[in-house]
Amino acid sequence: MGVLKMEGSVIVVFIIVVFVLVAVCVLLFLHKKPNRANGFTVETESGEIAPRYEKMKNIQPTVNMLSLVEKIEIANRSGQSLMLSSYDSATALSTKKFQEITAHGTAIGANLVQGIMPALAQAQTLAQIAQAAPNGLFTATAPLAELMKYSDGTIGSIVMKGGKIASHSGFQEIALSVANPAAVVGAGMQAMAMISGQYYMDKISKQLDGIEHGIERLIGFHHDANIGKLRSIENRMREIVGKKHVDEADIIALQTGIREADSVLMEYSTRLERLTKTGELTEVQVRALWSHLSAVKELKNLQANTEEHELYYSFQICLFANKLMLESKKAEFATRMKMGETEKAMEAFEAFNSMYQQSFISNASNFLDTLYKPINDKAEALVKRQWFESKSAKEKLQLIESIKADLQGHIGVFSDDGYDEEMIRSFTDDSEILYLPSGDGSEQRVFISVKE
Image (cartoon, rainbow, N blue to C red; front, side, top):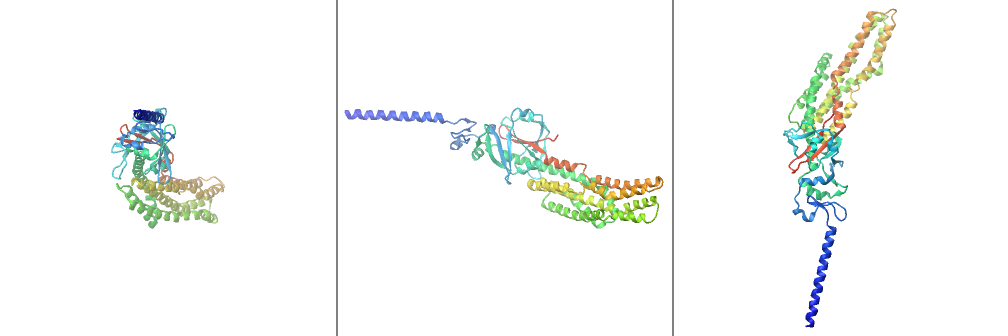
């Protein structure tokens, strides 16, 4: 009987101990239970934001998980990073306009080929776009030349609202299973490259049409070999910019054309540099002075020498050769854009920008002033040397000035009317992109700001 009582007491004690342990465990669990939202962990005991790895199978991924994200970093292969930041409601009231990058009239996809030409949709205000962004609207600002370097980007770090870092791999496994900003922004930048490539192809074709008048004048200079070489470069470029599909062979042809045009430019620009250093133009005029002819006669000879001098045709051939170099480099840039080779396209763009800043055409007006200064000085001195004012002498002086004006006008024929500088600004000035995940994750949209 005593044994039974003892055994009963042990059992009671055991039950009480178990009950106490269970109660303590429950209290500890409730105290340490993490806050949750939208199916994944927001904050752990250590303060780090991380997904629920142990119950992944029980979580239904939804695109509205992105509404908890403050910033998403996109990294490229070069080690550079771009930060997509969430728009706040106050900013969403902005009237700034954006165009959606689309393919076949729908939201951009992750894969594009040359045959499927994307397009820019009608511009919308930021406020209008924000109305279609229940799960967040993300933005990044950088020059287009930089944005296009992320066509193959991947997700880097992720910052949740509140400033805490989310676990990279866990976020990919859950939220990015329905929405991948890096892939969509990359597709958008690749599409933007294709759009820009075709746009600049059309512009180059119009530029070549615009210089036909200047080319016709060169034929009369009887420098058939070099002018024929330049015409051949022009024809090859026309063929390439008119093609629907382009490839690496077209790139090689354009690069060859640049080298050939450069060799012609070097030949004739060397002649012009010789004229500025040797004083050859002045020497011709001095010989006229020793002829003891009248000032009017000397002015007439000066005019004739200026018209027939190699200065006149060398300057125009330099303009043509340099124009073909610039257009060929632009065509290489546009061709790579059209092919979706954004990294190489940006290299070609940077090379074009450098070439343009140092080009003969960009500095032609100043160079022409340098070349004609001794001619103008001599002509004015001859007019002043007369004993009395001569109408004929003034006419000769005006004719000499008109020759320079003619060459100045020829610079205008081969110039771009500001088009090259506009193109450079469009890629070097800041542009803003928007990333918008749709409500159900079926579409992910990318917009780009409209230039004012």
